[in-house]
Each structure stands twice: as structure tokens, then as C-alpha cells.
Image (cartoon, rainbow, N blue to C red; front, side, top):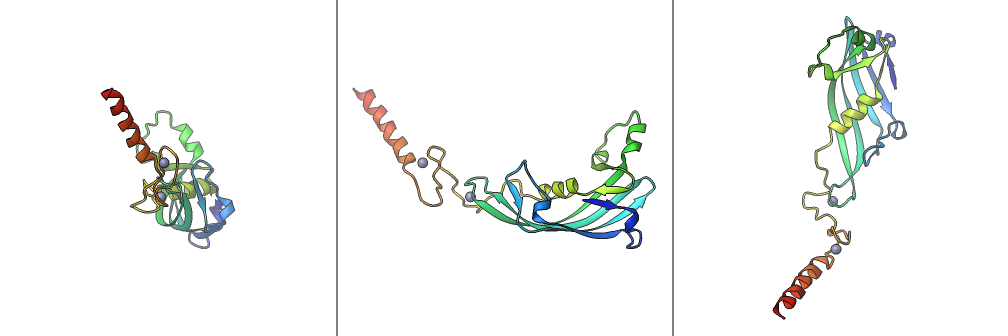
Length: 171
Ligand SMILES: [Zn+2]
Ligand SMILES: [Zn+2]
């Protein structure tokens, strides 16, 4: 989704956009949108750079890190990003990357491409460890049974086999 800077002059740089569920994909993660993403933001021009501040809201589904059940999460975050024209990057020959520069996303001087930013902000908003429940027991590493639904007999079998070995030792 491109945001044309010229068209924003009347609104003082403010804009709002909605990404429908099928307009933003997260191929690399086990993550999908279950509600549209609502973005409200304001763009300010500063000589060459453009500063973008705003917030976004959505709801996503992601897999529990232990049992792989789908978990719904509400996302409501604020963000700030600076964009600089791609051309001015190239002219600076000995540009040392500072932490600030890593936040400088390139734009073509006329419009900002919003997709990557929105995707990135949603991923950053995720907790490091997504669980369906703090007490989730996960899947059995041996048979894959969901241990929240009941225990399998793998643990018992392992104990049995240890007893078998002890028997061997005795004889
Ligand atoms: Zn779980
Ligand atoms: Zn098992």
C-alpha cells in the first residue's frame, strides 16, 4: 500500500488505512490475520527525511509454541519510523551505519510503501514466546499426543524399559 505524500498535504499529513485480511501475508511465520489491520498515522516532512508516527490495531492467529494449537492475539501498538530518499543514501560514500540509520527505510521521495512497516510492527508486537496458556503441557516428544488432552503412555513405557535393563544386569 503506497502512501502518496502530496495527497496528504490537506489533512496535515494525517491518514488512515485498512488492510483487509487477504492484503497482508506472513509467509515466513505461522501467523495470519483474523481481523483487518487499521492504521492511523501522521507523516511529517523534515527537509529530505520523512517521519511517520502512528498506531495500528488488528487481531492475529498464531500457533502455540508448545502444542501448536492456534492462539488469537490482539495487537495494538504505536510506532515511529523515519524514511529517507533512496538516492541520498547512495551519495554518502563513507556512511557508517549507526543504530539510528537502521530505522531509516528508503522511499522514492513521493510515496511511502507501508506494507513492510506494518508487517514488521506486527511481528515486533508479538510476545517472544506465544503460548495458548502458561500451563500448556505441549506435545509428547515421542508420539506427538497433545498432553493437554490427556497423558499418553510413552513416559510409562520408558520407565518399563529401564526396568528391563536392570533385569538384564542382574542375570
Ligand atoms: Zn499450547
Ligand atoms: Zn507419547
